[in-house]
Image 1 (tube, rainbow, N blue to C red):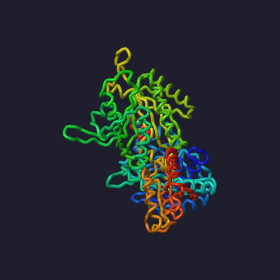
Image 2 (cartoon, rainbow, N blue to C red):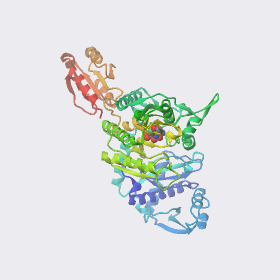
Image 3 (cartoon, rainbow, N blue to C red):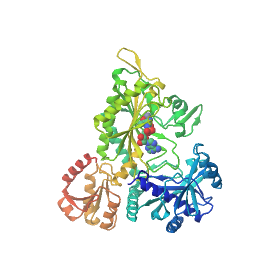
Image 4 (cartoon, rainbow, N blue to C red):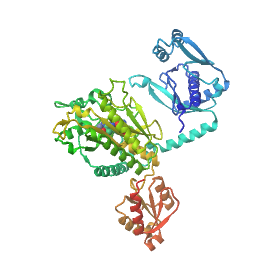
Length: 582
Ligand code: TSB
Ligand code: ZN
C-alpha cells in the first residue's frame, strides 16, 4: 500500500486536504477548536475539539459534502508570514493553537499561516495553490484521541481522510484499504472464533477460545521441538516478582511506565512481570557454572503483563497480557557471534516454514557520541556490533542500521513486519545485554579458574504467541495450513441415512487428526458452503460411490476440484501435507 507521507506530491495534497477538512468542520460547527492536522502514512487526520459533541457515522457525509462545496468554490490558498505576537493575537480564541505558538522557539520570529477564503490555519506548508485541486478525497474513519496523546487530557475528535490526484487512484486505494480490512486479524479472529475480549476481563486482555487455543498449542509444540534440538532448557517461573527483583534488574527505574502498579501481600510487594529476564537470571544463578557449560539457554513460554496505552491495544497484536516465546542465552564473550548466528538461523528457518517473506531486519546500534544513554564500554560495544554485522552479512541478509536505537545495555536485532492495518511491528527480536548479568552478579569460572561475567542474549522468535498468531491470521487470511488449523478435516455425508456409518468409520480411522463429522440434517450444499466459510483445509464429501469403493473424496480449501483416493492413500497424503508446514 502506498505510503502517502513518503510521496512528496501526495503529501502536500493531503496536507492541504487536512486544512479543507478543518474549514468544513468550522463551517458546520463554529465552536470547533483545532489541534494538529498532520499527514500520515495512510493520508491525513485532524484532531478537533468539538466541545461535548462526538463525531458519528452520520456526520461524515455532511462534512465531506461541505468540503466538496468549499473546493468547488475554488479559493486560492495564500501564505503569509506574521510575528509570534501577531500569531498569538490572531489565534487568541483557540487555546490549542496558542499552545503550539507558545511552544515555538523564540528564534522562530516568523510564523507562517495559510488562508483559504474564511479559514486561516497556522502551518509551515507547503500547500497546493488552490482548494480547487482537492477533488478526489474521502474521509476514511474517525476516533477519539487524547490531546497530546495523554490520557489525563481532554479527548479530541480525530477524523482521518485521504486525497489523490485522480478518482482512479482514490478508488484503487479504497479497494486496497477494504481488502486490508478483510485481512485484519480482529475480523478473522472473530469470524473463526479464535479469540474474544470482554470488558469484565479488561482492555488488551484477550480470551483465547478453543480454536485459538489449538493454534497456540501447535505453535508451542512446533517451537519447543526446534528449541529442544538446539539445546534449550525450558523452565516455568511465576508471572509475578517482587519489586526488589525489578529494582535489581533495573526495570523498576527504567521500565516502570510500562508496568502495572505493585500490590502488597503480607510483607512482600509484588508486580506483574513485564519481562522474564530477572527470573531467568536467577535460574542461571542457582548453580555454579564453568566456561565449558556455556552457552546455557534458558527458555520459557512466559506470560507477561505490560501497560500499553488503551488507544494502542489491538486484537492479539498489541495486548496487555501476552505470552513470550522467550529465552535468555548465557554465553562467554567469545561465543557472542556464534550464538547470535544460531538465533538468526532459527528466525530464518521459522520464517521459511511459515512462508513469511515480507519482513525487515533492523540492527539497532548505539550512538557512540551519546555517552549518557549507553552502557560505557567502548571496546565491548564495538566488538559486539561488528560481530552482529558480520553474522548478518554472512547470511547475505538485507538489513538496515538504526544508530542510537540500541537499548542502554547492548545492540539488538529486530525483525519488523507490516500488519494488514496500522504501522509496522516487531515480531522476532534478539538483544545483546552486557549489563543484566552484572546487576545479578552472575559468573562462570574460566580456564584459569578465575571468575568471569557472562553476556546474555535475550531472544524471542515468535515474539509473543499473541502477536505471531495475529500476524499468521493476516498472512493466511485465516486459511491456516493443515497442521495449524483448529479443525483439519470436515466429513460431510451426502445422505445421513445411507452414508453415515461409513463416515463414522472414516472418522475413527482419522482419529489422529482434528476431525468433525457434520451429521446435521441440512442440505449438502449448505454444509459445504459452511465448511468453506470456516476455512477448513479439507472437506470430505462421502456418497454411495465412496461407500462402495471404500474411498475418500476430498476438496481442499480454495478449490472446486474433488479428488478421490483409497483410504490408505488419503492417510499418506495427509502425512505428507502435515510435514509441509508452509
Ligand atoms: C526477548 N526481555 C526480552 C526478551 O527476552 C523482551 O521482553 N523483549 S521485548 O520487549 O522486545 O519483547 C519481546 C517481543 O514481544 C517483541 O519483539 C514483540 O514481538 C512482542 N511484544 C512486545 N510487546 C507486545 C505487546 N504489547 N503485545 C504483543 N506482543 C508484544
Ligand atoms: Zn529478556
